[in-house]
Length: 77
Length: 245
Image 1: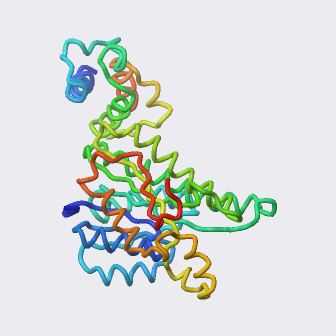
Image 2 (image 1 turned 90 degrees about the vertical axis):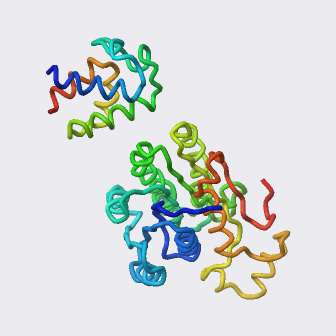
Image 3 (image 1 turned 30 degrees about the vertical axis):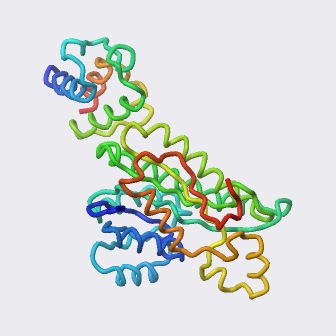
């Protein structure tokens, strides 16, 4: 679990250029971390590659926060 | 100028007059090309003519599941797809009042829906690369309309609206999306016209002649080039002045 969270956090930090301590459970990519809507598409692409999973479009839309992403990846991998 | 060395381009409709010339021109500028089309023999012939850096990726664009597979096949053959030229198009002309649902739908599927699906299919790689070029081959009739071509004109106008919308979305990622709108171009299709028919067409064209596939290919090359990086959402009209838009 913590391993997944760390890897997800690393991707978010690298892609959005935010401080690591800002990437908390409830941090919304768009509202709190300054992502635009295309960034969220790119984050999902990066999660897919990092974890070797496929995230369908309707599921991708539900991944709005760091916590959402960790929960989804944990369930899928 | 316009050096495409190291870039990989997928061209649909490469078995046709304009598509083949676009592929030839991009290849001549240094690009690796994937030639797509329904008829395999002319694609193989073109690949043989071009020699190295040419791949054949046949696809029937009216088969929408085959369309989904094409970007993957092209990327597998070339390593990536940096440039997509949505050139393939069909006509099923008929008077509007006589046009069947099938005539309408088949033209929309091949000319517009396939371009949508292919653009979507190549976008992931372009977004990661922070570089990409999509060139959609529209038509003068997409802007002016043409009797008997309600379906074709709708598909070609649709390409322009789609290009502009996608251009907005991906501009910040170094990806441009543009359209080329040819007027009357001399191809195997227009060779069949009589001299009298050609004269009737030519008087409507301020340049006094039909365009050549090379003149369309040059426009596509420009929009595909690194030099056109600040041009996006544009429609380049190449029509000898037939419609000044």
